[in-house]
Image (cartoon, rainbow, N blue to C red; front, side, top):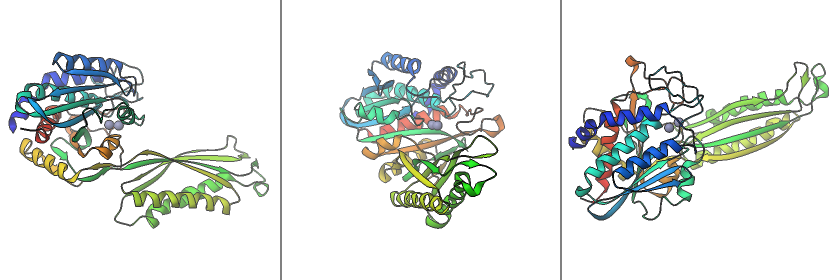
Length: 391
Ligand SMILES: [Zn+2]
Ligand SMILES: [Zn+2]
């Protein structure tokens, strides 16, 4: 089993150079043109059948083994974020205001390394590897667009795998957890409508600023009073807007925020309590209200049997790493849409290195990770793919 890790290690410079090149030239969601061109070129050089323009800027390639057999989809996301980089790295972004601050540059480099390795092993497996390089993971709907363009058909995958470089955990940690691993995300928009007027005459107004403050306080009771204590949920009001002048009570206040849950029953309960609290607290304070909930993402749910097999592969390929089978995150991920239809596993590779100052969190202007994890990630992905292909 170590062969996969050794072979990935032998390609370290290839992987690292690709990663640094992508890092230097980040592209945000649905604008990954240069990135997609490099991916298509690398895969074509391996003699693969490559299709571009799937989900706008996505790339799909098929790699056939020695005989027909199971189809394994491997997904790698490739978009950057609208963040001004502050790492000071020699390979820092040269694009103003755009940065690979989530590690998707690493994911693409890992994906191309996986493609090279599996191509070398193609006489050793039966079946098809479907390599999917996905645009616009960062909340822009890349997975949905690729699914709409047919990535789950012709041929339909039997298993889907994806990974994320994870700076919340150190190098040497691997998270492979069955069941829900990343939460469902819903966005809420609240308007509280009162009656504006002079700040010195609140008695003649229905103050939506005060009502908003009471709504925000009361929303905190959902997690503390309505969600079962052993279940996870987050309700965050992240934006509040209303009023301009110090002496004018505005007629309206807008709130925006996010709800994160893992289970449908908890999600439904949180949403219905949020609606009740907004309407009734506003009403008690003589204001009207409007609530709009937008579902952003379902939870990422790993298939138990497939996940168990990936855990076994990880124990063989990376025996000295710490395998965590419990840690889940309130982040969200559009791989959720793929895993709703195809059984699979989404796993995490710890990538932080505190001594080298490579431990800033994802989406931070100083985000960077320890590149020594690139071969480990590639080796684990290759070995996991082969686990589900025929021998
Ligand atoms: Zn991200
Ligand atoms: Zn990410």
